[in-house]
Length: 192
Image (cartoon, rainbow, N blue to C red):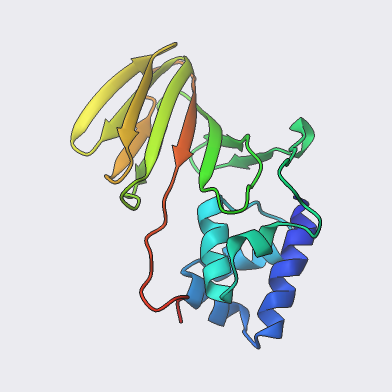
């Protein structure tokens, strides 16, 4: 999906509902800066963030991200993959297209030597992550347990527990994550 087109759609829906950026950010539980970046087509939000924005707008995710006439095939060209340079020098590439109603992402991450990507919170029950190390050595912490994964090693874990990725070696580490992230159901419909 074209980020500018998505941004215009989010902004149009927000204005149609008489919401300010702050109003929608509060409802969607995302930062105002993230929401503003999405509306300006400057930042590719994860499927989880897009789902929160859709909830905040009171619209199904599929209607938010699917252009009229979209069907069962979504192509994301290599030149349009989202590359995010994170603080600390690490890089994420979101390889998969946004698919309405599917909370799945396939991500390629490169951690420079000595880089700690930080702690990721527990996701909703039913969330899963599969990790495959392409090169280098990854220290993956799942709950209280550390795992050292070398090139070619893979690991699965139920992602309803806090987890962390780090490279404690002197060589860059590249790994892939295939993630199915569930969203908790909110009683009473969209957040207010």
